[in-house]
Image 1: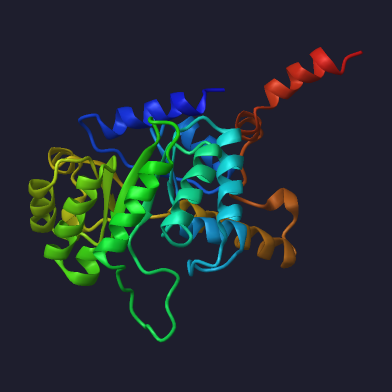
Image 2: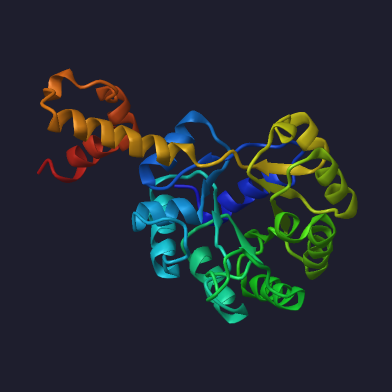
Length: 287
């Protein structure tokens, strides 16, 4: 298995490289192995997919840091793909951010984002709102201070463009860059004009959350220093649909032998690495 540090160096090679990549959206050990097998450079484990996987609940920040970190460890233990995670607001204030960074670093993640949204949703607030800039800066400083492995990537994340406008988004991006974060994770950027302005005002690698028709050309994104561009989290949705359809078919009387959409025996053996277990069984249990 590749060490945590080696994975982080591979992650940095992408962040510091010349090209934009789309990460594979993963949520458990098997999806991580599949993404690695297919050839994705990076795996992305989001808070939303974490909540769906661990709790079966929507993305309302009800999952705990412990639950999230445990799932990260399961993923990293099973696959070697460098893992980027959405650490939300760091599960509390700046001191909680430090704990979050240490827990996720111990769990083997290669990169994480810490955001400046006021989470979880405050009482009486129907819309998302931002933390004060000073509190956001404090969280980014705390995240950087908590790192023990210098190869770990911490991205300062903000939804300010969507919540408060482009000028505020640029203001926060520049402030977090000045603190020393490794990358900027911008959510809510919808147009080339917005991305052009952000790229011109900053120098760090950029990560984009979500995509619009204007922001899908990888050559253009690469030229604007976008190194990771999320495409959404369709795999877990596809898995949900596949499980639903299979269970419903069985409940409706379809015979197991007549089910469709199941993986081949060869694919299952490859993804479960059964050849390793066969060898270990021979070496250690043959008597």
